[in-house]
Image (cartoon, rainbow, N blue to C red):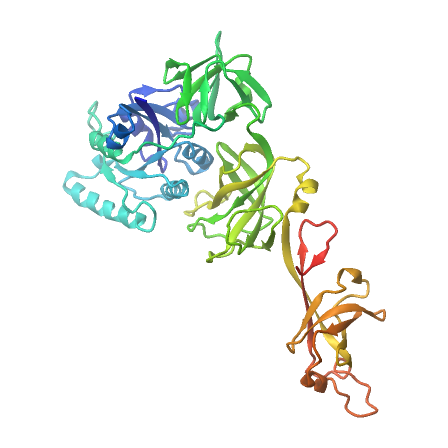
Length: 536
């Protein structure tokens, strides 16, 4: 156990210097690095994930676990707002983050979104203040101190309030071929910050594929990061959404042939007779392990910086690994202490994402427009990416882990009826007349055409504080007989007493303002096609 790979993401606003930093740090490049994409070269920005690596001396944490060498794989994430989907996909395969900030501009919109992603993933970060060379020498120290304090103030209400910071210049102004400044300090700070990541090698293989290309005479290469499990030459892997299985012909890790790789490693996997155009990015796995989900249920955590409402029956962008699809969201909640979703429990429908309350657990049903592969416990990020990218606002709304994968294509008929999400409904009527001490007639609770068998034996309450049970209909006009739980109060009788012996008027008919309301409150399950009602 002498070698370990650690994946470190480079995140930050567009043009903050992430790719220049990767070049300054790197000793070994991969097939996808340094803006090789034609559009990247044309536009001068990173538009896809880039990968490269270098080694650092092991700190005490690594040495105590027997590691003699630590390879750092840099994941250079795009910084442009329109490419947030690729940032999210890249962020989910990394162990630690370097947040690159242009010291002359401070925290910008995508800097803030990258911080949100890091906080969601609970990854430790190193803050790098770049382009210090652009500050006039006589103002440099004061400016660095000022920006450092501002950054500390930005981070004080996050989990990163103690994050280390370093100041660098990746392309010193007017220095020609001069070396970048501050890189040694950065490497030292990174070496101290990183710790041995927990790797799950016992679970079946999942490989997050980020690039795919063909090599003439060799086959097709899938490059990616092993999320969990082990992979060896001659193993069979499956690409679940294509329903294709292929045998691994050979493997490389940063241009070196290997026969086995483990969780956390970045690998190039060569297979034969596979068209590279079929897979730009996605996932490969042990055969049969991943199923295609048409919907999922997640536990919900609000992103505190998202200021818009999150509403049921609205559509949002859902990111799971490298996949981002549109889904309809249905929110529901419970005060159950367990905080874990269980099919068969009762949950209350929520029109909007409620405010955080002690003991309140919120879940979301996400129905995908396109099915995607996933597993239970996968992290899901819910965002609104169609918000104008020029607006300085957070587009990440909520996040959570998958509690239930729904893999049946006919889930509307087979699964959703078992999902007991209810809405509270209420009907109100009035006492029409008192029949005796234990019976009243109520009106205006129901329409004439209402099928009354659904409501027989349901409990009602009265604005006078009394309670009773609906027993039967009365006449043809929607009136009902209500059996009281206790004798009717004298005050109630008095309000409905006749004016005289010959007066047959009622509180309803003579227009008196002291009518007593009859209140029927019941549940209706939103996925019950029979629209049954219950009070249980």
